[in-house]
Image 1 (cartoon, rainbow, N blue to C red):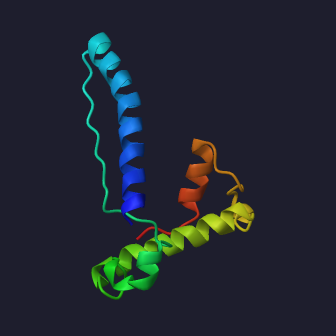
Image 2: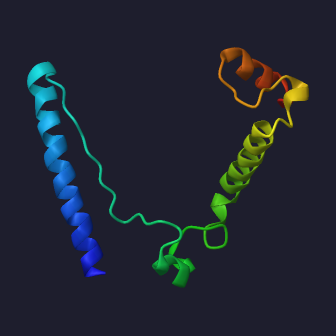
Length: 113
């Protein structure tokens, strides 16, 4: 694990040095400030640690308050997949939604309560 952390540290240092030069230019040219938020406690869901310790993640079992968000996310994913495969073209929603008119057709295709 230490090697991976050292890699991350070195990568962050390289990126920070490159970005800091650009950020300084923005400050001197436009008096623009920048905030950088680095979150080191995030990990990929397929990381070996989380595969071995699923209790360390937020999920619908140990965090039931997340269930509505999960259900909405799953429904939006399913809708996106259906739109991409042309299953909503009969309602006027094209496989690629690119314009405001496409959004308006999409909006009118679903009931609102």
